[in-house]
Length: 495
Image (tube, rainbow, N blue to C red):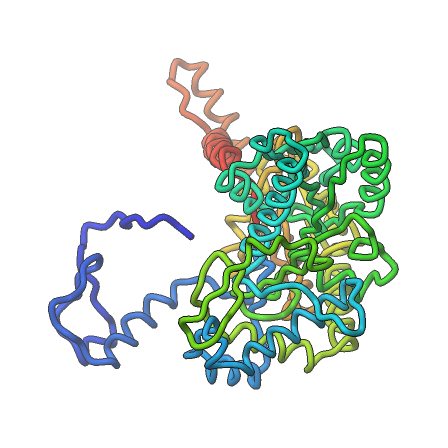
């Protein structure tokens, strides 16, 4: 959500281009118009404004799916008027959600017996899923502390400083202390050893990230499980693990099936995953799966009957669309294990092509790992002439949206560019992007050389008593420094 604010403009009205065929009077920007307008005019006005948005296919900042098959688009449009919460009215949609939960639980190796069903729920994304998982951990910890007659007012969660901002939201909204393991240059994920050292009797869980926002790297959940098991034995505690697999949950099972990160590890009690990332569904769907019923306190589940029958619900919101749930089911049965594996291998291959192309310029250090989410994160070897923020800004001239950002605490001096490889990012896209980066590097080099020439000429003039003005390079560096400071003040997050 973005807090609403009025864009600075001298004109408080809105007028259409081709909409003038239908409407001659301009519309107010921030107030409802007094009169109705033809539907064609409303469509044209909005459509014209939306043309100024970026191209979603070229938005390389986002992990979120931007393309689906036409058949799935039809299913989405055909169910767009269904409110998912009306389970009694739409029982088939509810059944499809239950099938998705069970399929994903089996994918994550949940210990489900033949006569059991998986425990989980669909959400509007991983942010809501994490909130629900965190609430379950907090309530279980509080209940146990109450039974033991101990204080239960200071819960905490241990994470790495590389976590997505939704973890900070959970901690702030639900009054849980967030204990972050700081990063260091060259090591941009949570160190399991340091994480376990920070665990205490008030720790409700340790959150591991399968696919870091910053570099795509998988954290070592297996090592974390082993170290935490030993600490639990020594202390008598029972601190569990939650895996934030928002990005990696639909990647690891297909590219790295032998990697132990999921319910094969005893301390992993819940996992969230974003269906709208590598689950290959448009924005608006996530999932949270619990190991067993015992890991989801019954008192958190509400039961309602005013929609026709008794319906259990455990969500932060109530009404929501059914389209994304149906779209997720489509992808799961349409692609199957084979299809998902093919797509993830293709993404990995395209990431390798881009990585090689960027490295071949000789101007960048590659910070992302080959194992993990298919993305390429890279930093300039020499930032004395221009910065990654300059490159990011110039890439927009070619239509590319590539984010530049600084790393979190203890590595803030490292600024990087990151390109996320999705299903719709082809090899030819990789080659074209590298070519455009090379053009920009050449232009920035020439601009820096020209700026140095201006500095030399200005210095010569000042010797004759002429007041020296700031050089182009000095001005550019001041501007770059300003934006770096702006970015530093922001919390690191991801789309």
